[in-house]
Image (tube, rainbow, N blue to C red; front, top):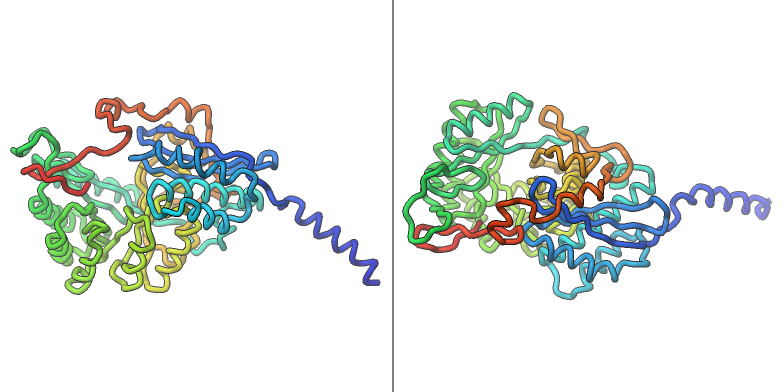
Length: 431
């Protein structure tokens, strides 16, 4: 009886697994496009199974062409012919193959590959990526958006408009008269300085931020959650003071108070006040985020997912944060492709320690190039329910938005990079 049943059981297994036969990587290519004026890097991996492919985000806007070269000249030859279903093994091999590691160029290149492989695996399974990662922990993703203005009243008015659209969390930024503020205009005037470039002085900016918080609480009330990005532009001592002074305003979080090079100052912040802290969009290495999470020195880990190497490492970072009460707040600005935004939302959906998600709107050109962008409703972002990321890229249309299409970018001749900001005396400060 056993010998008669064995062939039938084997046939059933064969039929059940035929659609999950191991695909091999046939080609790796880069889709370099800028539909919103920001340089995006999307990696496409094709397999030897007809119609089975995947997309991943490796966007590092400021050094985009270096990432593209890393994918095409180094990772592609390494990947051709390898199985597409061994994602963890592939990630480890790519990470170690250059010997020198934990840099933003390599990490973003690896992320493009990693996210594309997750897309392939989920497409092959006929499921959205979040199902392959274990399923939903919530129905949708609460997010915040950016309100800014040249004057405090303008920022408050813009925040009020976002609240009317259903946002419960708003990041507020304001310009500083005559100076180059972050994420806010400075107006037509310019304070005197010893150079001709953009000027920023930390102390006036700190005073201006506190005036903004005062006005927001007075005009907007206490139901809205306020966030603010310090953008690592302050000296460590002043950063500690500003975070402490912000305590009465009950901020949802203060972001990037100091640079990654000065993370030991988070101990002083934690010792002196209870203001929640978000940190990490510039992080590349476990050496940066491990001590902050392990010692409970931050409240939100705010990594740029492709900067850390993709979904594979970031789901581990999220699990690590869960052990220590640190929640996620993945970086989600305009210089993340819609593929990258969907990766963010997918992690948000599956991680129990989700905190908040940064939201940036998709312009018409982005939505034409990337079919299936994440959808925003009443301040929540929803994940796609179609297999993979649920996003298809119109490659012919993407080619109509090449790098360098922005007139300003061509004029500056910085190849997508940022310029410099200096104090009055000419000292370069962090961007």
